[in-house]
Length: 617
Image 1 (cartoon, rainbow, N blue to C red):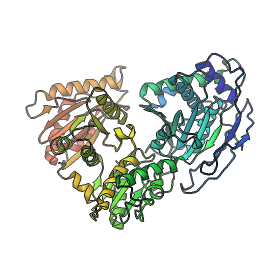
Image 2: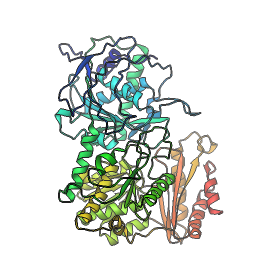
Image 3: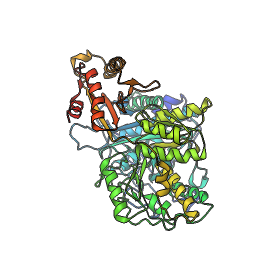
Image 4: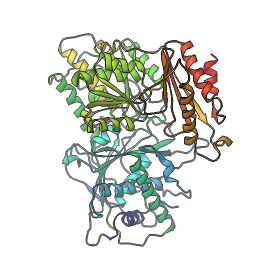
């Protein structure tokens, strides 16, 4: 199938969203690019597009340039030399990953064919435009303004071009940010700055978080926040229709409306400036409240390198020893993931080697983060939740902290007994956690923090956005406040806040895979099979006097016993039953593992090899 032409996309878009053509409505058919720091109006240039073979917009990308380099004014009229084509059928619904879209964008990994192609991306972008118009209850004549940004992945540039082509061919305007963070994309729907063409009606972030280099995907935002699963399904169904109708030539030819306009904006400078002002405000408007503090950043070659030059340095911090700040989509040093042991070891070693007061690590698109104190103690997972809970409960005494299902019993004791708050343990999935906090507020139960052990954390004060940079700003606020008082204790002010958090000596996650081809499934789904395993486990545990099922639980089967606990649940997306075990000793952990093994052993489609290995140690 040839790349979708401008007319094809527009016709498909109009056929879905509005039955009438745009008679009498003509918009400027110009593409433009500008740096809003030096220009306040569009610089326009002509781009000729042949209906039979759409050429890609060759945009200026900040993918391989540092954030402090000014792009200047550029006119993006150059046409690409290739026409993307595909003969493969795209199964759009299989691209859904909860509230995101993810797929394989780069060939080269055996057994992983490319399914996130440029033509598919064009259709998805056009479908988002149609969905957004419908969401805003506007007719087909309404012209939208949509921002697009990307992380450091090697497929980012070509997908940005495809998104741009899909949106502008549907008659809407694009504001390109280039290298950006996911939280910044959401903020662009809220920022009021007409010179920078803000706020936008919707935003698209091109990212696949910490997944391997060959993957990529999309996150979508409106001013109400990120989209939910139903929204993503709607968009993919629309995209499939656009893609299929264009492939089979079923669309009635209509008058081609003009294309949208494109602007390049250095939005990360605007976003970072807001973070800087937040820290200064917390320190009584002191210009350099972090002066004298040594804080280093590990960006993992993702999009988080901006935090050094655009946040920490303006606040006066020493940043020598910061590492992997340059974007590189092959991630040559370590996976940019605060949950990854190698990544955490890397930032920890950097803190110790440089005798830094604090280390900060981000994931690829900066919606997750973690920290390391001056002694090399990791502040991630339960510790980071405890630290954020301590900060938030100082500001909002008694508030409810919502977390995912795998947080520890020790965290519950810490939040409720030491901090005087309430711990509401919910389901896995950052969107589930955030939506639950929003729901609690809607029924009168005050909640100001929603956080997952993966490092996703959202605050009510920040529009419930899971923003890794904003979480770190909350830590910087504490450091700045202590510095203002003349304190020279460095990150001890942070570690003191989590003093008393009980932590298990043993903490493991074991994944029990379901063989979908096993005869036991009898043609049924892995989800049904997994649910039957959980029901059987719950029944078996109820007969064991040493084990106690949690009275209030929202996901899987959670059980306490032998001084610890375990949780067996069904994965959100995969044919897997993850088993989390925490206990005060290895012997106690093995006892919990044996209890699970005895209950699930009869399910022959369940691979218990890893659990057998654990209990035999």
